[in-house]
Length: 105
Picture (cartoon, one colour):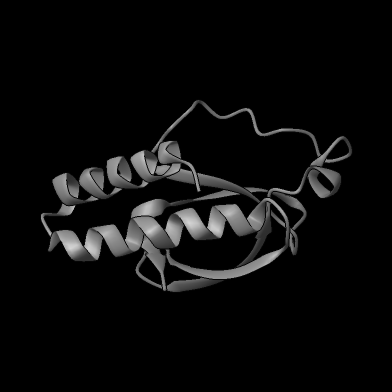
């Protein structure tokens, strides 16, 4: 693990805290969960859950592996946004995203 990774985790945790004013320990735990899922998605297809805008929980299978998502499936044309995580949904074969704050452990 690099110090830049730790820095990004702390930045994400503080962003969660500023948004929600939850206990900082909870924000830090959520930041670590986000970091670990993204790290795993770079090498595997990962099953994870997040809360949708309507309040329901969605099970997702996603990846960021380049051999699965490109060149056939292209690249998402989203603007850079640190509050959402973009992933390739392997069940629907398309790019999706979720709010990082809504990740469910």
